[in-house]
Amino acid sequence: MKIRKEIILERSLAILSFIFPFAELSYYFGAKVFLNTDSPFIRSFYKAYILKLSTFYGANVYFIFALMVGIFIVCSRGTLPLSKYARFNIIQAILLNIIYSCVGAIFSYLPIVVRESALGILLANFFFLGLVVIFAYSVLLIFYGKYPILPVISEAAKLQVQQGRGGPE
Picture 1: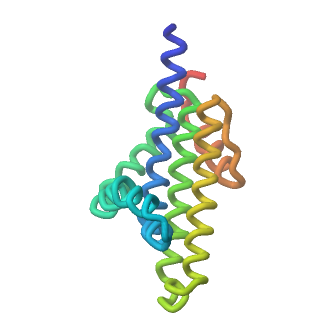
Picture 2: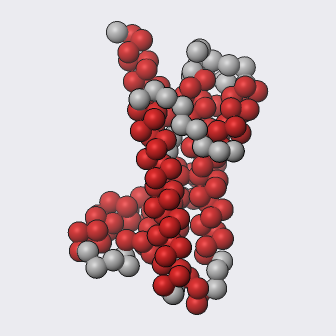
Picture 3: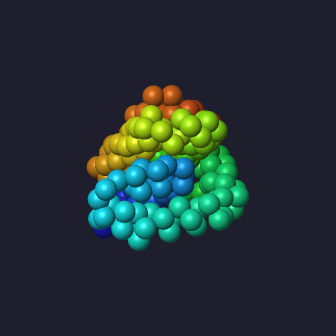
C-alpha cells in the first residue's frame, strides 16, 4: 500500500509540474487562440478558467521564474528524496517551459501586421495546439508511468538527472 501511495504521489508531482509550461503557453497564446473564435462556449471557457491562470502568471512572472529555478536546482542536484522518474519529468517540464517562453517571446516581437493578420492567428493556433499536444502526450505517458520522450529536451533532462546525487529508484 505504501508503494502505491508513493507511485501516485510521484506521478502527481510530475504531472503537476506541467502547470508551468501550460501557464506560459496560455499567457502568450491563450487570448489570440480562444478569443479569435466564433464559439461562445470556447470564449467563456477561456474567460472562466484559462484567463485567470494567465493573469496570475503574468502578474507573478518573476516569482514563478524564481520558483522554477529553485525546483530545477533541487531536482538536478537530487537534494530531495524524489525518484529519478519524478526528477526527470519535473526537469523536462521546466525545460519545456523555457522553450514555450522563447517561442512566445519571438511571436510577440513579430511585427504587428504579421501578428494580427490571418497568418499571425494561424501561427498562434499552430504553436498553441502543437504545444498542447506535446503537453497532453507528456501528461498521458506520466499517468501510465512511462517516460515521455521529447527530442533534445529528454536528453537534457536525462543529463541533469544523471548529474545529481540520485534519489530512490
